Length: 516
Picture 1 (tube, rainbow, N blue to C red):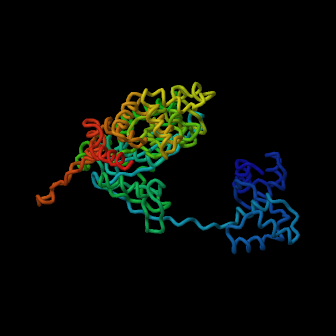
Picture 2: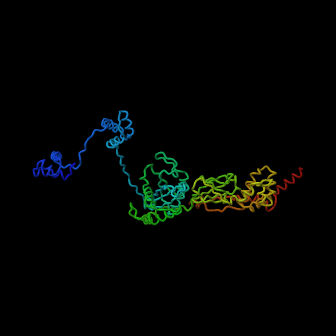
């Protein structure tokens, strides 16, 4: 194809200077046919004219177009299969080009949304973000994000779990950071918040509703696939991924938490927000903080609490990991209290052991002190058995106590196991003192020993609930006094310890002698 400059010169020489075709061809050094073609169209052609060549697809184009009219989203492979049946011998590449050039996919309908505006203290939006296995230890890192919808004041907290207790614990930390609570909290369909949903019918998690009621917050579940309803927290998650996460290195999880707090305080809440054009911290302190509701003074228990029976290997299973307890508690029921960092184990109200909580999987954690005495007592033993020998070592009167158990109908095996457990929890001296008290009172049985131990070692009392509501009617403010059940213990232990055996027992003894 001749350049635009040559074509222009041909037209100028012929129509302006009246040169002949032969003279122009000789002057420009081109073929006369090329000169004649330019003069025939009398225009300067910038692009070459496409030549239409016959294609192997030509006999099938009408059929392809008909398929596209009926099924606009039909795949290339499906069209190829249909054409093979009609005798098409070509490949799929030319077929793809033709289909892509003629396919008419209807554009998605553009939906309009009403911009949501919130009053100060009205709403907070909450969501999780996942950041993968950051430290290559098999544990994913999650980010809890909450933002106040009016001022865009926010806080984040990285965790190693999205369990319900971690979810509530993050709420508590966020509300303490804000210094108050909003009237509503908006969520998507998190399993920690929403148990079931059918259209507009929503069933919230009962434990979650109990927490919401504790702070007098109204939860709101957004519609599925409607990110615009909680766009503020969605934007916050994107903002974290784009502005906090890239280019950072973390030595450990604690370092990640420290860096996130610094980023939140020094940048995220200090910048000029793109939507409000105001600094979130100043906006919050001026307008929104005074509108927040006060926190409930009663602290909400965010620990995970459950009971387990100690198995024969004296390791308790939690979240695929196994944590040890003293071996003498085998077969006993214990209570686990799991915090964000620790796994604490109690027998009744008595603290037994504590482990650092691990988020790895299928690990075993054993403390050396929980094995103390096992290797010395378990193998060999004496003719009486290692458990009997161990109980007798508690104190001199334990042998007398065991003789009374042997003479009765109680299970010796059960009594021995519970006595060793009580010795671990309260100590040998306390158990021996309880045994002496029971023998002096004329009673036996491990439940009586435990009753005495609990009475002599009461658990620490704490304020677990807020003050009662004061009513205008004074009759409704009367508080029914609680009965101290320990006075019944005094009937069993106190009188016998002070005055010896009860008189009824003495009378019964005399009557038995008379009968004999």
